[in-house]
Image 1: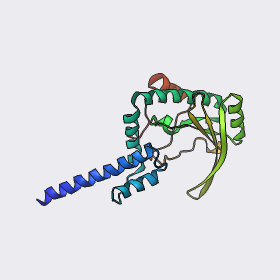
Image 2 (image 1 turned 45 degrees about the vertical axis):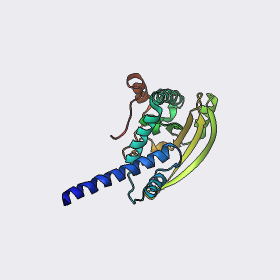
Image 3 (image 1 turned 60 degrees about the vertical axis):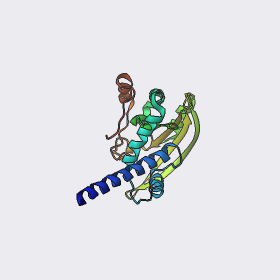
Image 4 (image 1 turned 90 degrees about the vertical axis):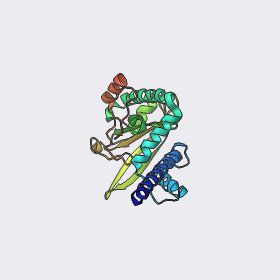
Length: 213
């Protein structure tokens, strides 16, 4: 009898944990929360538990919810965004562009932007190229973060593509090019796709996903 009760407790516990994951992902998908930490805390509070899932668990569930809600249109938009990313990366070829974020991962949802990293010591050069080529630049800003005792600066360029997809280009110093970075959401290496790698994806498997599982 005790074993049966133990199994029931384990089942209920697993079910509750999944419900927290699902609730956190739902909050993020519909925009009720913007950050993973707040979404997980709100979900746990709503369901009356102290359990907080990992970012990876929530990210994978968020990907499922996006697929459930958006289906074929999501795949079509992903291909469109990857093609647009390639064209912009070609314009910025001199600055070692790398496609990152949900367009790289293949896990886009409504409202997702195209995220590209570039490496240059004078970010205004990137702004000039974009404007000269007719890319809409909406605003720019510097961001400073402290990681492991080091202060890192990056220059963010926000814009829109010709089909009104959001665009964020993050300019980092040349010395940061090639350095390994860990993804805070999925927990793996933030590799991304360079121009040639993105071309191969578009040629061979346009909706390929790059997630740890």
